[in-house]
Length: 335
Ligand code: UT7
Image 1 (cartoon, rainbow, N blue to C red):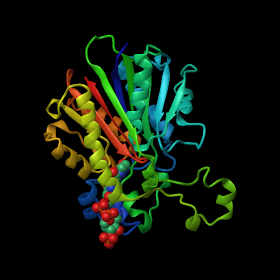
Image 2: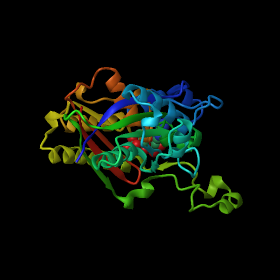
Image 3: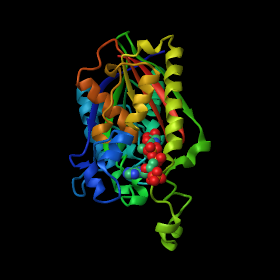
Image 4: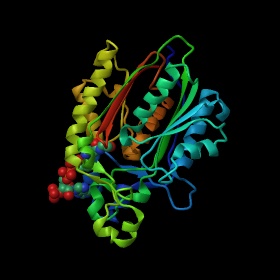
């Protein structure tokens, strides 16, 4: 059985910075509320005409990751693309990346697991490498939220949180004989699917209905989130799935060198940090600058932590996520 390691990381966010004060001009909110409840100071939004889409940002992040891995698009044997905001309803974003990057006719798989998407995607890629089927897999998380949020006061509990961006990792068969991905742990609980969801447009609301009904009243086009309910489940599941991963590898919380939690809310990250008794140097957060970029948040944070020299060879790096579905997961990585 082979193991895999991350051989290259990259990220991209649009240039356009949207501050809390900018949002307070559109809806009844304010900088104090947003910072106090979420930790977010600003986020990036795609600007009309800047050329970015979910897949375009994915390519920009992927180009950096590939270069750092010392590989070219022709070396990639599979794409695993996590997003809840693909450019098109179908086909998924993976095929767009395949085309834009000029790759061979490699398999392109889209993962639809929202905030847990990147951890799920890493796990899928890891299995293909473990079995020996592929050597180099491009794993992406990319999201364009800003085009689909409700910027009236009605949508404020959701629209102040989410931002746009992309991150990518190249997973490579580990020939070094050291470390790599130790294990991944995935879960779901569909009975809570309505607590954080965007029901339409979808096969529940097909085109004739969209045309006939007044969308403002009848069709839920904007994401809905039962914030407190999600928060309470998040703090339980994050801790559980991190401990599950540690136990599976006979490790303890004191072995964690760097925890990269999905950037859902700074308060959630801080709660987990306290619960696991981790130092500030052992948890990386950048939600202050980017908001919650769902599937992109972990690869963006992981890339930045690595760029800042906060991840060193031999470190135990833990990725953990929780989100819509509900779905949650963790990945234990020896760097
Ligand atoms: O990434 C996927 C997983 N997502 C999460 O884990 C998110 C989990 N949930 C959260 O992060 C928090 O629940 C939120 C940040 C979404 C909301 O914070 P909260 O402390 O749970 O606030 P709340 O929803 O209980 O609302 C408290 C008050 C309400 O007003 P009343 O009813 O007390 O008068 C809201 O209407 O805050 C109001 N409110 C706002 N006020 C100003 C909600 N959103 C805003 C806003 N600005 N943007």
